[in-house]
Amino acid sequence: MSTFQAPKGTYDLIPPDSAKYLAVREAIAAPLRNSGYGYIETPGFESVELFARGVGESTDIVTKEMYAFETKGGDKLALRPEGTASVLRAALEANLHKTGNLPVKLWYSGSYYRYERPQKGRYRHFSQVGAEAIGAEDPALDAELIILADQAYRSLGLRDFRILLNSLGDKECRPVYRAALQDFLRGLDLDEDTLRRAEINPLRVLDDKRESVQKQLGDAPLLRDYLCDACKAYHEEVRELITAAGVVFEDDPKLVRGLDYYTRTTFEFVHDGLGSQSAVGGGGRYDGLSEMIGGPALPSVGWALGVDRTVLALEAEGVALDLPSATSVFAVPLGEEARRILFAKVTELRRAGVAADFSYGAKGLKGAMKNANRSGARYTIVAGERDLAEGVVQLKDMESGEQTSIGVNEIVAELESRLG
Image (cartoon, rainbow, N blue to C red; front, side, top):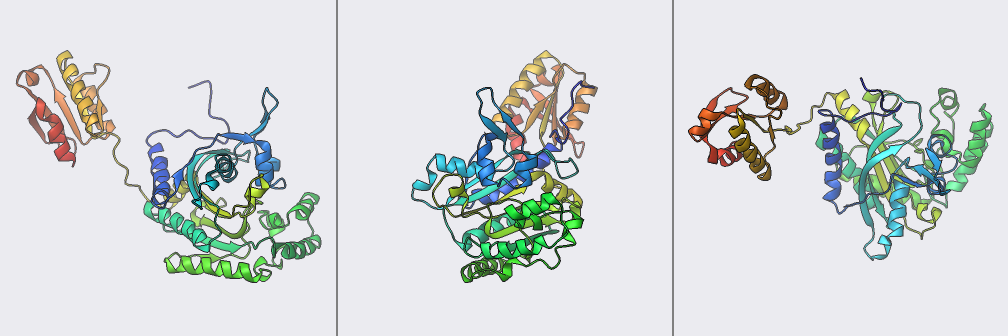
């Protein structure tokens, strides 16, 4: 037993389970790469002010959950709690918006950090794949991202997820709704902290998960009743495009999401098999975020999908991913001459693209064959002095148990042929 353990609320990804996480990341990224999104990677920490401005000073993320620290040089930094603000900052810093090719379409994958009460599906360290389309205001772009996320989930075999959709209005119509919601909230029996939040950003109160708050919100005014004509038309086009693509969604007039930067389109992917932590991903349009962090007006839209929660959703549905074996061929040498020759052949197989492994540590035949079984290899190559004297090795099919002799110089071609 090690003296040290992973910090509370975190986890280690180790084989064989780690292969599931890699497969989920690849499945989410695949439709993005096929749709013009380029990969971006940002630092694991940023200026505290970037998140305070972008995510919102009244959000729980900034006030309660952010890992903030001061460096020896006096810089105030924070481990990134989400990806959008960092990606937009990087795009602005690199002047990607000035290349003339808008929108700038980017995707990313990485770890994020929030100080929360640990529970299944909610960790202090978690993994996401995200996508951002920066610099264009177009309902087709919003629809594209929702469709791509739906495609990614379905490619994994997920079926029991739901897409919730809403519009949060814009700078023209949301202030009117904001005032109406504040008037409503002032008449409720809420604690001082919640009332203070209502004065700063009343939409955040709608996102409060406490039952004592939610049961008082039944008659709260709905934003859809306050949308201006432009926002109504925009939202209706998003709905029509998604529907035409065969993607099923549910209108949720109370969906607000937990970050301050969202405008107009907002959406969430939920899976009812995950209990209280049902959201597996979400996103929306954030037309004012660039200006919030000191950039020009760049209407944008994006999403982030949780890798951890997607894996839990797959397990909840009993979906077994078709994962390739980590090892296709396992070599078992018996004797020094066999070690030298088979090691060279394993190297050749790897260079030919065949997943191959080797029995290290000078084990006997029995121990080496146990390792071969554990590796999951389809074929095992066994060679001893007598085999090599005849210029052959023994090739064993680990599924059928059939064993055949093949020439040493035929190993690579024969296995490439058998493995396709």
